[in-house]
Length: 275
Ligand SMILES: [Zn+2]
Image (cartoon, rainbow, N blue to C red; front, side):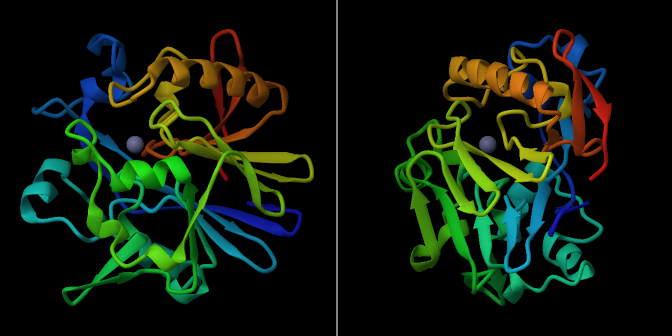
């Protein structure tokens, strides 16, 4: 979608699977399985939607899918399926790895940072050599100092050799004119969302605060969240703004409805909207 002088696109890195119960926390299975039918291992299929923000001078990517650094065990656990990967899909839009100027991470989990680095015949390199990689200070701390609970959610290879390209910010910041990072916490301590404004339109990438359209209700919170009450209160507050200001909401992990507009703040119902 073109808005003013900027262009917004959604590209993906295929699908993967996670446990349906973990994805929906205390929401009962008879409710969530209507949206996401589970497989024989109770896993549901999730998307990997990256937001591309093209301005006159910059090409920014928000979150980077699963990447190419999985061994056969993890490949079968996550059941990654792709026709084309994120890099090939970007090339299809005429965007090369060298063209990318900014990478924004909502947080450091492995399903959001996969293509930060690339496996080049066994050598791990920055996928986007000319980009700054922007995340919250607290996210950098969570990546560098995981504990027994959080460690399985990170892949250290995704950040190998990236130190000189990483920019860690502290709190809310407009990092590109019209593109604001808003720290939310909730899912992780350093989790942030991306609010892009251009003229009358706001396109908002919620990361794991609202991973799919089926998580739109404030109480529908993933069991993965480290600070669920913070997720609840930030969702409530941000969705009021989304309703009043008619935000176009991007759902990172929704394989079927990657974007929508909130049409009713009482029922939390959505209108389809394609970017
Ligand atoms: Zn996450």
